Amino acid sequence: MNNRKIIASFILSFYVGAHFLVGPVSWAKIINEVVANRATMQTKSTGIVAQASAQEINEDKETTTETEVELKDGSAKVIERPPTARMGVHILSIDELESAYKMIQSDERAGAWVYLTIPLTLKDLEKEEEWQLFFDKAKEYRLIPIVRLATEFKDESWQIPDRKQIIDQITFLKKLDWPTDEKHIIIYNEVNHSYEWGGKIDPKGYARTLTFAAKWASTDNSNFVVLPAALDLATPSNKISMEAFTYWKEALAEEPELFSVIDAWNSHSYPNPAFSAPPTAKGKNSLKGFEYELDFIASHTTEELPVFITETGWRNSLLLQRKLGSYYEYAVSKVWSHPQVKAVTPFVLSGSPGPFAEFTFLDSAGKPTAQYAAFRNALKLDTITISN
View 1 (cartoon, one colour):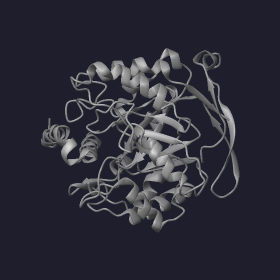
View 2 (tube, helix red, strand yellow):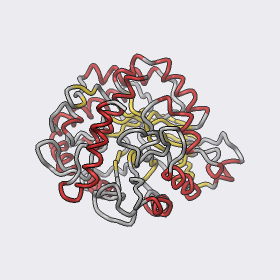
View 3 (spheres, rainbow, N blue to C red):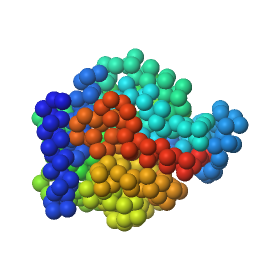
View 4 (cartoon, rainbow, N blue to C red):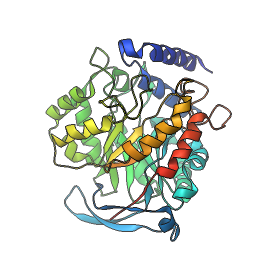
């Protein structure tokens, strides 16, 4: 365990104990330091959604539907959409694909495609062959990558991308042969924290970046589905962070049509406080935080955006361990079953040893944790959708 992880473990312990008193601290920062460490080591969604049983999908495992979508330039294009399940997982490295497949594919959902969130750093641009192999294997396993753009962690923060870096990352992704017609990308991460955006809070700057990235991704109708950075819904406004809806209001003041350039919504709806609240809890910092975001979106645009919850999940504490099974079952059947929720990728597949030991689905030896068992058991309640 390196010094960063030791420090991160201390911070997490402090966070859990102090959350009720002082609010969230550098949770996203810890996540991204681990992503940075690992990196050095190695269309718009529209249409009618119909539910299908696993048995129906199994009758023809190659079932896809052809859908005509409107592109940003006003033209139309026919794309193929496979049957998909909602519940996936968040990974930190392309090396984790095999383990992710074993966890999130099940007999109940055989034949369905499943979502997988993964970061792409600037250093990954040197690994085109490895990423293509990752995409090839993902296609074989029926996994749909949601690729989150990231830059470089330097001077205690993730650096703000310049336009060349944005173009380089999107060009890199355009060159790859993706598993599906639609290519899901996230334009950076939790930018309402200063350490996620060059050490400063700059909603107007991020609004310009998001607009540029979304427009660049659509320049040649490459079927990119563009998602904004998810914001930390539990953080308050202070010197190093900004409350989520305040952030979006300032971003919209800079780019009033911001919600029109994206294709889907991205949410980090964690069960706070302390990643320990029951799934029945309400509030913007709860598991249902995405519903508050949808209300906010509805007040600023007529677009009905599909939702991708790319981070969520509980701590596996002694107090919660016996409740995880019922919590996941309730969440899958009563919360994440919301008609606009298209995918849920809980954080994180492999986060041990280190600060994510209480969240990880696999321990340091690669063996399933209580989180794993609870999640797998809840998959029987997941639904398969076919978009028309």
